[in-house]
Image (tube, rainbow, N blue to C red; front, side):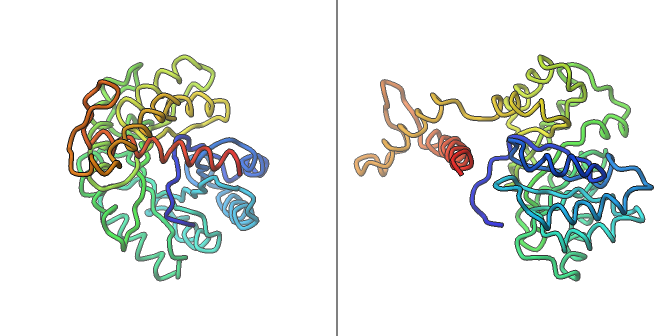
Length: 296
């Protein structure tokens, strides 16, 4: 595990109880894999799924894909064994469901420390409860706490709808205040944020529209429930060739000695500010990371 930039355009949930899915995951063109022990796994096969994930992650072969294990909620009888397995498996991150406050993440971080978790193991937080929405800023602040290691929010829109009784409707107007609150909190905490799943994986147009909406909101990527969603997801959350070329051009101009002290310059007849160069550097980083992964 390294601190180099990694795109998180797509994060595909894969049930830990499905050995074939865990094997197929090694061949899929996704940025992140979320190997699931929670919602996708029935209670009577939790132990089997835990062992299958341990075997799969320990065996490796996932290449540049970021491997994340979603454990069961802290108040369930499976969480302790899940965390012990995570320490053995050494994934890139562990996804904590039902996070309500910073205390939940701090508790996990402490448990992992006691278990001698590998250095660099990151925490991801599911944002899917009413309390999480009310405490979003405080939870995201864990991203600034090296002792916790929070690096990503994952929106759990299905559970959020269930817990609040809000309806999941097209265009998600009723969800927008919570989604944007979490985007703002994530940015304040210096972490990434992934949009929730789109349930009807047969509805390609609806999925593409929701991906575009997520990108417009400032999400870094989207969680997926089926491999057929990956291509459209990457299209929405990848910078275009024109966007990257423009970013490279304005950064090159600002790097010239004569522009070193300037806050705004003219490029191709357009006024651009230094903040545009800073924004462009992220597009460049994403494009370079994608190119590096593709050529590996």
